[in-house]
Amino acid sequence: MRVIIALFFCAFLVSCDDTDKGDNQKFLPESNGNINNISVVVDNALWEGKVGERIRDIFAAPLNGLPVDEPKFSMRQIPTQVFDGFATRSRIILKIEKGNLDPTTKIVNEAFAKPQTVAVIEGKTDQEIIDQLEENKAKILDAFNKEEVKEKQRRINLSLLNTKEIETNLGFKINIPSVYKIGKATDDFFWIRKSLSNTKTMDLVFYEVPIETISKGDSTIVDIVKMRDKITTTKIPGEDNIAMTVEDAYVPSLFETIIDNKPAYEVRGIWEIEGEYMSGPFVTYAIEDEVNNRYLIADGYVYAPSLSKRSLVFELESIIKSIAIK
Image (cartoon, rainbow, N blue to C red; front, side):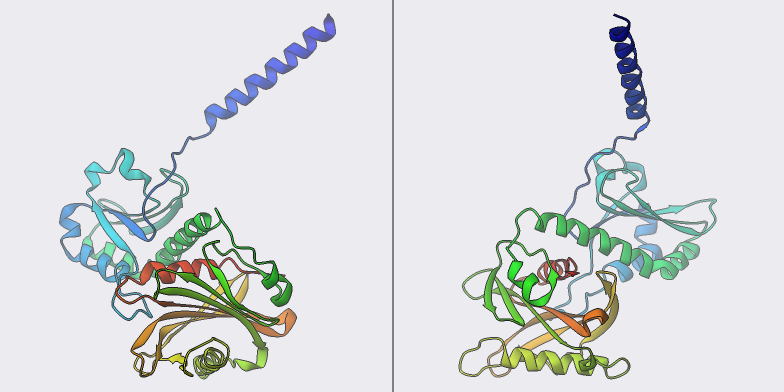
């Protein structure tokens, strides 16, 4: 009987301890919202003035590498006085606070919901707020983009393509939606497609090149474009000897980034098939893999005339950013 009473007492203490822990944990609802949509919490007067103009200049600026201007983010303004309840559950939020406040910028995760990224900008005057926007725009854009890539990858992971052959031949893991199909597979080259209609497609290409193929410096982008043109001309199946190359009229953009904790180059631009009036956006990542003395190349491109391209390219970007080199 003593043993039974002791066990009951211990169970009671554990139960009380668990209850206390639960009471101390903050409950957060699930966040919501379309991909790449920002809720901008700001008073109407600021939104309609120079502060709102600067916000739109930064966050609705045209995305690099698209044939028609499309904004980096879509935005909806929420007046401060009605920012409550369901409105607080947006996945990415930009909050502007003007008052007797020192100028500062804070990035907070899961302030009102989960997952969520909130950027809060404070200042006494319009100019202080604008200065904070300008000084911290790169940091805020990066935080918002990472949150949206994470959310897109979560949705992608719900149903995945079997990529074991890629892992075996090219030495990396990647999460690709099962709606994509392998169009061509060899020991060192993979071409994977998603059909949007009879004529519209999204494509992914994976291969490797010796590390000396891409030099570091002024000629980096030249080397990557030359490499890409060669691969798409010789490796991607075409009809009547047509070849997809980078369009000369659009100068590609080059950025440095990190994928799988490795330095990488990101190139965005427009491809074309000369004489066929076919073109579209592409994004190419060259991931430096020093251990294997190579660059792993992941290229995504879209052919979807009449469709918005921002979300399509973002899907390809999110897939590629799931790469994990073995």
